[in-house]
Length: 260
Image (tube, rainbow, N blue to C red; front, side, top):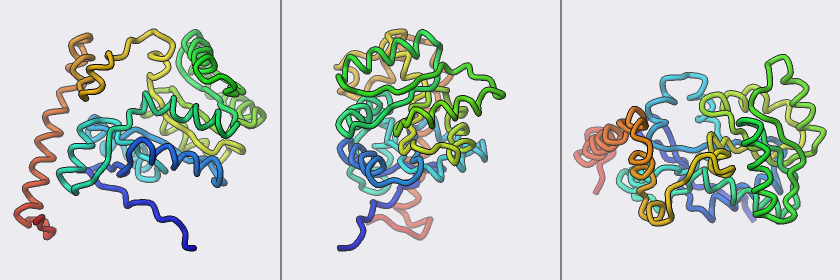
């Protein structure tokens, strides 16, 4: 029997997304845990990344080499459908951490949590263990480890035997941390960059209610709750416009790849 082939990664403007739904993403990380022989990176791909990743060559390379790029934003899902007719669904990184914990619980794999403030880190670990009885959180560290203490942290992670590592350092620090230290990680097989997700798990930041999430309006809820986010979310209509232009170019055959 031939090796299983993963669907081709989709370029969306100047970044990429993997054409997966939630179940497919879960099975990929399960495969990393069962069959991997190195750390595999799981990053979130959303419209905001279009305006940050290409500007930073180091971050761009991190994303180009990522093992799984989750369709974190509804904008990526819509863009992939419009440009390629791709059948994928939104897989929020802030929810995928729970999926990965469930997989780790089922596979009896240890988890290490690195990042955020001490109280947020500790509180989040307590919530995860309560939510997934039997989950083995074999180590944790807040996000204020000094550079000179990084070798000691790497040693702690390795000695813990963790197979899953959550990085809650914020972007682009967490992605660059992975690129710099991945070759020193011995037992780790899956590394998810979770950004500020620990704040929501620990209760410091409230997520949108189910209605808003179900209708892909979490971005609007957060904007209404935190008007200061307008400085970040102004990129959404620009992203939509750029995708529309890319679609029109394909439609009329301007890029030599006409859509029928």
